[in-house]
Length: 387
Image: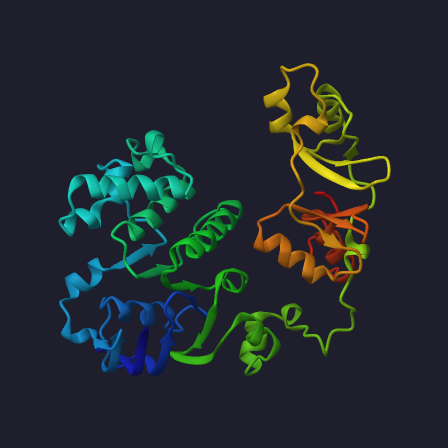
């Protein structure tokens, strides 16, 4: 655990950057520091690896006062990811990712194994990207390498200072998802600085909201959304996010209200050429398979069909896979979204008590529903498309 006790930071010009900060960063959680520019969030984070030193107060890591530790060794045991990535242009990707293990005198085989493992884990095949140079990678790929470098020496603590803010929206979304997935596997203590409330809500276990060098509110995202401490928090979060269950004029929707009632389906007896044609005509990359009674039998993707296409006698029944997750008619939309989020699903079938297929919840159908119920939340350009 990381603890800040009565920390103040006053610069030589008299500017009081931090005012009596008392915080606990729980082990194995993502804590997001957020607030407007100049609020002290980055200053607070940099106390943890001694890039900033407090004017008064203590910073403790697992009970040890870090002012008594060697700052170089401290930093080598804390991962650090920054907005500008900071890769060395003269080093290839593998060498960049292995900088800290080499500084810690790891042997080459151990370093190479860890770097290769992490590159593969973030979707950068080490056999392809390991010998490339930073200039040959996109911004999102470079930032992935930055994350790998922070993880390579197996630190328990990772500091991330607005790491995704310079990326395009799609890359930012992908890396946020990647961070959540990595955290589930690696269980690090992550302190993440951002100015984006949507990003904070998505990735945080705990949010610390700051203003003018002080902590205004700290808590779980849902708690802060439901119980903002003051008008500053309300304004910073935004009024639309603050609709809680008691105040909302809208009923919680059921999946039956949100689902697509006529998604593309096929019978198990369909041939593979027919399946491809159906997907082409409907512009989808998968089919749900139902029998004559509309009972859900399975699903098949275009990739599976193409892989087996050479065997002319095969039908969809031969190549489909079971549908592992579905939601019962009458369930609420939040229940469906929880299943989709937990298992990283792009869609979720709705079935009745006899497993008869009724409809399909997709990201597009959710957005369409939100656009109808909360019309100011969704840009008009979406217009219900994307199913």
